[in-house]
Figure 1 (cartoon, rainbow, N blue to C red):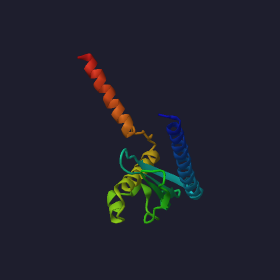
Figure 2: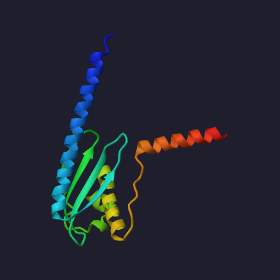
Figure 3: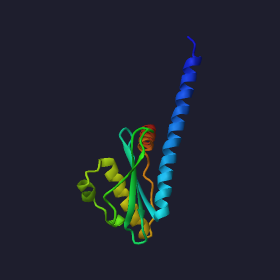
Figure 4: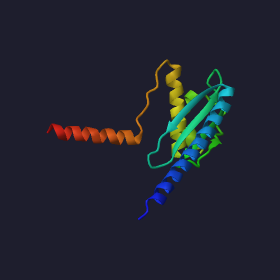
Amino acid sequence: MNIIPLILLFCIAFALQYLLTFLQMRSLMSSYRKLRKKGRVAIGKARGAFRAGAIAMFAIDGSGSILEGSYLQGVTVFARVRALRGFEGMDVGAIQKGDCQRMHLPTPITKAVLEASSNYRILMSGGELTEEPAPLTKAANALKRLAISRGET
């Protein structure tokens, strides 16, 4: 069996994945820069291991009122940044789950919006943001703890 075509196919798939990821990140950064020109930006994210994740961004003025919002949601590199309407004029620190439910937002976007609100409140009160480990990191840490506990007994 000739393995060279398989290796070549793998390399092409890897390069295509890299290119599409690059284009997605460029789109996200372009949207961020657009929001940043309007004021400060509050960002929240909802990670998804095997389901769609989301990133929500809000341009806010000096008093915390939302000027404009956008979001990125999806599982693949084909997800693109879209406008997040309905929050204009609201105080970013006062967003509640009910506000998202009234707009019929999907769960990942709701989580990202609520995290953006929480991040804003934490930073405005002088706190520091902590990063929650990714789902795969959590799984690896659980396996590590299991291996250590079995080694001790």
